[in-house]
Image (cartoon, rainbow, N blue to C red; front, side):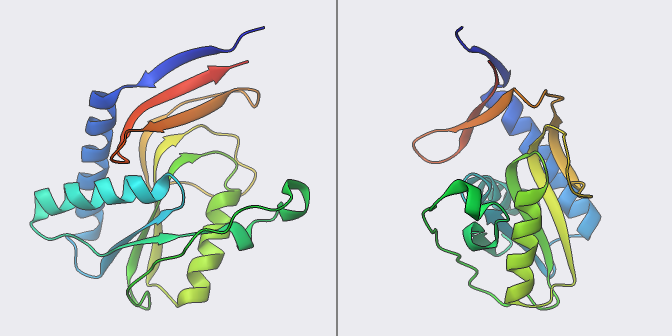
Length: 178
């Protein structure tokens, strides 16, 4: 039986969602002072870059940007076999900073838990906020995003895919039904 794919956000919808998230981040944090964005590889780091550019366009100041790899912090390494290690690039001190952790799709919350563990190993941030492009539900941990592009209720059998263009900007979000 073939998969059924539905586009749930096109390029224009993604642009609106990311612009709204950027405004919400600035409003909540009262500007960019001590604010940093850290994207979770892979996907969240690209979205974090787009958010940083939008914040710079709105506020006139681009927040520092980092990327974190959570491979070694996953709780399912035994069942997944060997996974390729990515690079964590956080070229600033996280102590006392307001961190916006960015991911493309929030599902069970386990990726976010692993990312928070990795961040805490780097220092002691003032706070950690969560921005996601898509929240699809089905949380297994008590994790809730602060900023959401779109809530997309799904079944556990469905999947959500964020497609990126050649410049690594999100261009489409698809719901995939088996």
